[in-house]
Length: 116
Image 1 (tube, rainbow, N blue to C red):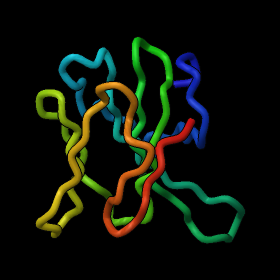
Image 2 (image 1 turned 90 degrees about the vertical axis):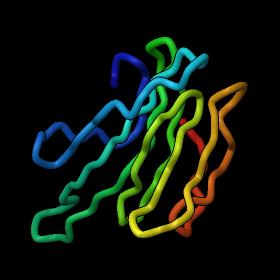
Image 3 (image 1 turned 180 degrees about the horizontal axis):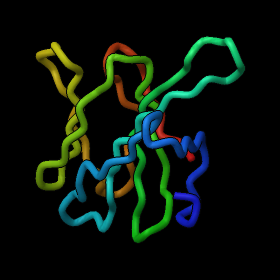
């Protein structure tokens, strides 16, 4: 992640973070990852966490959508589409990486903006 230029929280503990390939949209030369993490910002504080959809193209960090707060969103890639589905929701969000990623998405009742 760091080699590709990722900026953002980087939690290295296997029990407190996961970084999984969701897929590579057809025709995009990109990879979409589901990054879930939690951390304790200060001793005896409250546990924090979140989920990000992270995009790398040709091995370089392109950007991310913060998909917080929970519940976590299911991320899948089918053909050229990236599909986000919140548990228990009948609706999903579909988009592609053709051209530029959408500047913002409305996911799980929140606006997620694409940023570096």
